[in-house]
Length: 209
Ligand code: PRP
Ligand code: URA
Image (cartoon, rainbow, N blue to C red; front, side):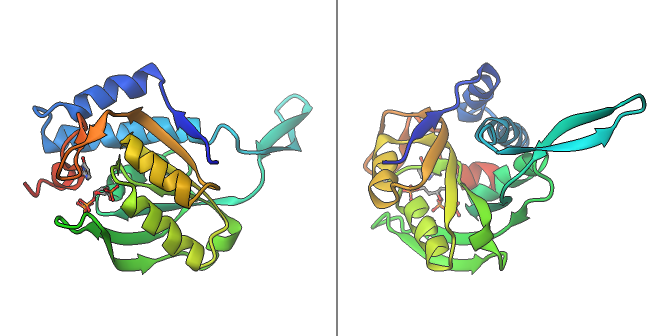
């Protein structure tokens, strides 16, 4: 069974409150999503392995530590996942970025895949799948399927807000993928929206409603 981490750092929680607020406009919404993504990336990378190296400071030789292990790949689920990419790249600037395009059919709530473009070496990378919203979980589960089908071996899922239903689906279908969220909300309404949630993440990020 995969693990679920709620990233409860006060700065993350504070910013998520303003992201949720319906009076937060597109510009500020984008900025806040970007900032929260950076803070979440800081937490999600806590388990990165380190290795020892030797360097010369201006006054002595010293043993010091650098990040070791696999390189990182970021996989935003289009569209809304795009809003979190730059924030993560602030901390992991050398990460490669692949895109999985999915939209949720408004009637069936099932994900429909329309685009996949990935770095060629995803099998050798530690992937972070990014989407602000984990609602039914259909989109995240389908994106992870698409990545596994193309060779991905190791990944984490990072979302701002999750519904219990979405967490359960991803855990059932992908027990090897740990989930990192800033909040777990109460439930999904009849239209598959997370309650209380933040509304439609893509529309709020891109100003399409
Ligand atoms: C939203 C969101 C997730 C998905 C979550 O995307 O960004 O990808 O819904 O819902 P699920 O867990 O029930 O699958 P949407 O389909 O609205 O597309 P968009 O990002 O292009 O707006
Ligand atoms: N997608 C969104 O953008 N918001 C929700 O609440 C659910 C799915």
